[in-house]
Image (tube, helix red, strand yellow):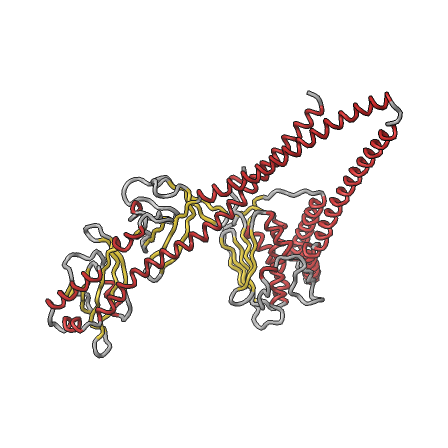
Length: 577
């Protein structure tokens, strides 16, 4: 195999690999975009199903209120016309498709009912709520297995006092009949996390495991199930039968008006097909273009070989073609010079980009070294005072802290040198609580000087996350310093810092963020010109540090001031391996 053939094969294989990577990137991007679209459509369908359910139950609530105002209801509570009232209640129940209508006194004793069969709902809590002048509701199951929903409306006398309650019970099978089998799969769980209403009858009465996602049948062994997070989406993997998707987005919507939670399972297969089609289209176009380019290159190479052979023969036979041959050589030299100039320009651009990045890092050097230097100065001055007061042990503590700060500055400079060499240390196991405590310790003198009240909420045990101790410390020192700067000139100065899991939240009582969407842009600053080191790079650098650890940092406004949240990846045994 000649060197030219090896080179061409290598180029082809490299091009195919690049196309495969591009197709994979397009697939991933298209899949996430399709998931976002499916999530929006599924949320709309879930809202529509929720509104339809509450609307269908609304008429039974209004029926309970209307029946409570009927004159015969007051007569029954006065001990009159019980039989006539039962006939009236049965007639109303038949005309409105209600399962049952019952009239009780204020103690919950049933005075009259449309049907003598059990309602399936414990009406005592409903009646108790109705006797307080409010509307009670609840759900349950009859002895025959029918699912029912009940409303209890208070009955007022002439003095506007509650003397009883009207309980209207509706059979949910009739309500959900017209949307059984529709897409997507929707179900509503009650306060016991039990599927009570759904358009997939096979999961009725399934229950949610304690402190876990998914559903398990009320009888029999659990069916195959798994769940995972895909970005901000929760995906369920299920083996629950042919009428439920195997992979579905799980969406949730609270329905406090009926005491239930609406949930939807949206099939992600269309999103995968769309992403596959997009990736295949991109790969096909790239391969077609590459094939055409390869054929053109091969044709050009063949023509060049033939031209060289022809030039050799013509040069041997006639001197008239020597000028043409010389012209061809000059064109080849000019082309080589152009290629050399292009390579030199590309190298210059790479060097310029590297110098620009180093310039940005040097601009942030003050943010990385200012706090340790201030701490060293403070500890040195305190050490001198302790020595003057004959307290060598306290002075020794300050000297130890100065050594720690010097070591810390050395590690910061090491990180900058690593960046200059295009090196990056891998994320290691870091105690998030210790990093936050160290940042608070560095900024505490300034917090006291600015008369800021600090509310610190840290767990007693370490919280291990994936990151770097020095760079995470820089992030929290910067956020705390920005919060102290923001509260300058305000009457109430309170800084709240809390750690919950792998998340750290910092709140202040300053004026807040004017444009939250731009807070992490380079050189964006709300500090006045001439303010203390307001270069507009601190939050941008912090954003890049957190992103490098796979975490996320968000900035926004609370009801009192600005709020920043840093979420990091918890350290796992897989990371250690």
